[in-house]
Image (cartoon, rainbow, N blue to C red; front, side, top):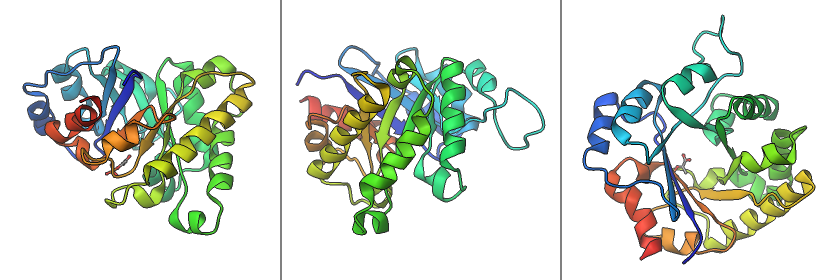
Amino acid sequence: MSKKIYLYGNWKMNMTAAETEEFFKNFNYASDDKVDIAVFPPFTSIWAAHKAAGSGVHIGAQNCYVEPKGAFTGEVAIGMLKECGVSHVILGHSERRHIFGESDELVAKKVKACLDNDLVPVFCYGEKLEEREAGKTFDVMERQIKAALNGLTPDEIAKIIYAYEPVWAIGTGKAATSAQAEEVCAWSKKLINEIAGKDVKPVVLYGGSVKPNNSKELLSMDAIDGALVGGASLKQDTFIEIYNAYAK
Ligand code: PEP
């Protein structure tokens, strides 16, 4: 057990500001050389998280817009997020792609806008069940990854955190097997390095029904650097236990 683990919690549309304060009561965990911890509350709870979390927990947003201000009703600018303590932004999450129709091109613009403004993009990609069953898993992901990295420098490519999230595993309780996740994460690293033209040592997380009872096996895989956790990140105990189960 020597690698650093990324433990990132996507709260989705859960957790009010009051619930966020409650979550961080007696939260005695901080990022160090063994673990990097981030939570991604809904916009309205970001400020509460920033105030309550302490400096050892990165605060992220679940989305952003690419323009700095103006007539974009319902959107939130990167500068606004930074003012509230945000350092990371989840982009390309399957719920944004498939419920809200975000295209590869829009996701790519958001990735670039975050990089230009010193925010860490947590770039999500992954195939739907029918795409896996049709043998299209790698074609779909290659399209998603190439679109997001188009025109970026190797330094920029290295700053992104990548999250492989098979759509069929998100919120279903049916995680990918450690072999399936490892296969894709290893393949992703190779592709990212090829696009960059050198080894940028990409950080690749797995996400999709990660729980304390499967995290040890998943996080022990060579190419998996951490977990992007949805449901199990809403409770302090289960969130931290995902890391502890591995570290023990
Ligand atoms: C997610 O939403 O990014 C996610 C991985 O969700 P869950 O852990 O609930 O499957």
